[in-house]
View (spheres, one colour):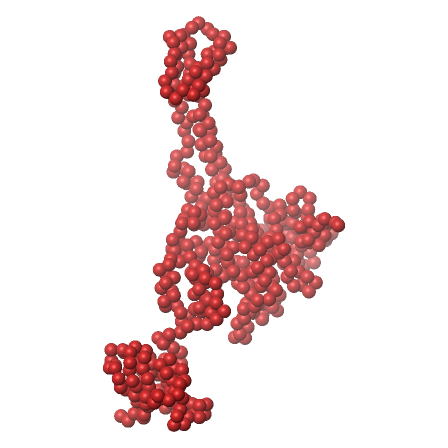
Length: 489
């Protein structure tokens, strides 16, 4: 069985592709050639660099992709094969979190991040692969832009530019490729000098502790070494913990105090600050000890721009112009409310039930969705704007009242023993209770519950428009309508 490499799985064969004879290097408006190169140094293994990149990538990878279609006033959340690739497993080697973590890491480290889109014979997406290349060059061929990637020392591939999703950071003057990594390399060079200075200072302070001088005449080198070794053996390596040593009159020990100069705290903080500023983060974000305001600032200034760029680039490269015309779009969303304080979450739970579904509220608390949770619970203080005036003032249009009564008579075939609503608006029978429509009951319930101190226990009445409703009041939200009559002013 022949062995297959990732290169062959990705591009169909293990052979290098050759440039077509009439392909020319693509020249930008400023006259430069578009060349993508990665810094050959090992700066990604610097502790501070890795911490900053990880803070951005691990939070950015939690953004959730959605395939939506918004056309002709119809909005759809699509969950087909493309959604499964984007949200679950972009390729056979990575799950979605690993995939987006690598994509964002490449973007933050190298200011360019490429994703190769693998398609089948019907041009449907079958896989997405982040590319780790050493060099890329843009070419023009058959009136299209192509890019030649070089992988390692020997592998090369010539692919259409529109087959790659391309994310950029610190966009360069030509407007196509990401900015240079020179600024962070210079900062890391200074940091390297400071780190080496600290290491050398530690080594120096651990080297010479003192000097033994003999008062005898000139000694041979072997005698000097023998005297030094004997001193170390007697007073340093003998296990005597007294801390007291003794010498005769022929020897003299002089301690040596070495105080090497290292970088000051302000110099070290200045370098650290430059690294944090380069990535747009602070210590609270890197060390995961941020508060609600710090998280919001980080999201809006770092994560949201990445999500916006990914949404636009994924949409433009995955869909054809026709598919985009019909409203197909990829969006990346993040539930920012998961990171707010518990007090904010509780306030949200109290006041947002009229605009968020049950499952959306449960997601804020990191709870699993419910099967019946895709609905909005609405209280009586929030009503349809079409009936707001009638609902709050009690005024009603006579035609609407007549239409309601006609519809009610048609649907329910009222008789003397009509069914009626209980206090929850549900139909019951008997008991002398009067049947009301849901809309009519809602108006009355709002007025009664809005003024609980107005009512006495027992029989009361409320006028709405040209109707007077007689009801028995028991307690808050507990009343029974026992009659309705036309009100004459």
